[in-house]
Amino acid sequence: EAGVTQFPSHSVIEKGQTVTLRCDPISGHDNLYWYRRVMGKEIKFLLHFVKESKQDESGMPNNRFLAERTGGTYSTLKVQPAELEDSGVYFCASSPDWGTNTGELFFGEGSRLTVL
Amino acid sequence: AQSVAQPEDQVNVAEGNPLTVKCTYSVSGNPYLFWYVQYPNRGLQFLLKYITGDNLVKGSYGFEAEFNKSQTSFHLKKPSALVSDSALYFCAVRALAHQAGTALIFGKGTTLSVSS
Image (cartoon, rainbow over all chains, first blue to last red; front, side, top):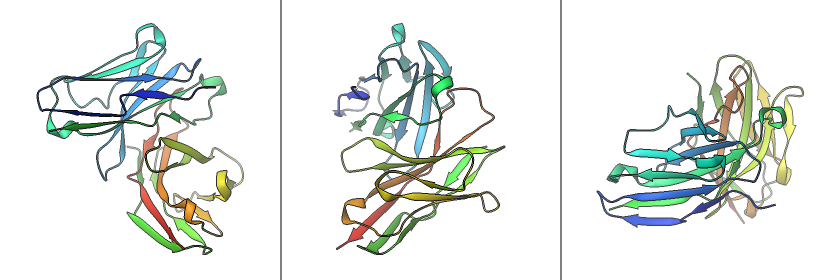
């Protein structure tokens, strides 16, 4: 079974440009999460999808960030326009339904974003 | 608000010695507690979890963790460290009372360095 995959693994852009990160969760996992880790800091929650619906987007830092999950499969996270403080590693994770979910999240390898 | 504290940025141990990586938490109600590990250039991998029951839980790669409700701690331990255990370790918490699929709250991580 394929794990959570993220693309790109590393993106270097200039301030003001746009970047789109993609996450493909494990097949059949309804829950999809985006997290971000800035160097040396904690991994911070950004948002949570259940299928195609945003269950919780309280962690999204501002309106420069837009997440979508059309059709309830893969998800994209767009940053437009990017700022220096957006640099970090963006992790995607997925988990199955609550009935079989004891809390473990399955993480991708992350997308490292560097804004110059 | 829920939070997780990992008081040590780095833990250094010699191979063969026991190791402890500390974690304390703050949450309303009974917690789900987790440890994840991140090896270089990899995503986070689940190590172990505490949901209920025995306070000592065993996980992958010989790791174990002890839940202490009175001290609100969930320290990660291993009786004999290996050089290959060197990695970044994250403690995480989720409150049982939350609805299905609620995101995990992570600490800032502790780098474990095992010397030969």
